[in-house]
Length: 106
Image 1 (tube, rainbow, N blue to C red):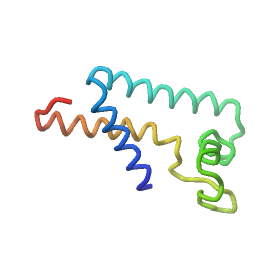
Image 2 (tube, rainbow, N blue to C red):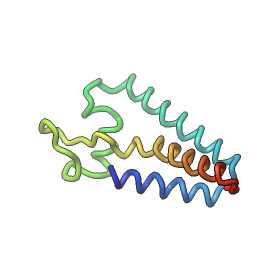
Image 3 (cartoon, rainbow, N blue to C red):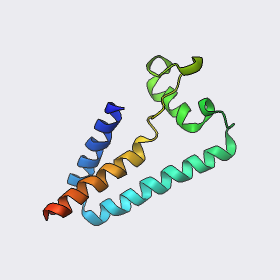
Image 4 (tube, rainbow, N blue to C red):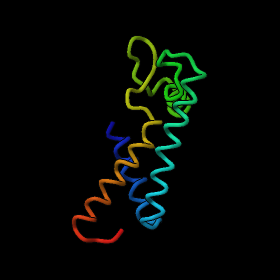
């Protein structure tokens, strides 16, 4: 969990430094729309057991079974790598809200 928070804030900070505010808003929209679209399309084609869903397969591919929680004998990560994308958008919004509150420019 803490690693995902670190990744999300790191990617959000990188995006805030590298992109303008308008491009960041568009990027956040595309990240969320892409995340939702991929999960929606994958849910139509893959069985409904959570270990076979797209996010379970992404975690297995990126991390391997040895680095996932072995709940009920099946390796999976309750937070997952795939859910880092909306977490990046959430962190970006938190960073931009704080900068707006302080009167700073992104």
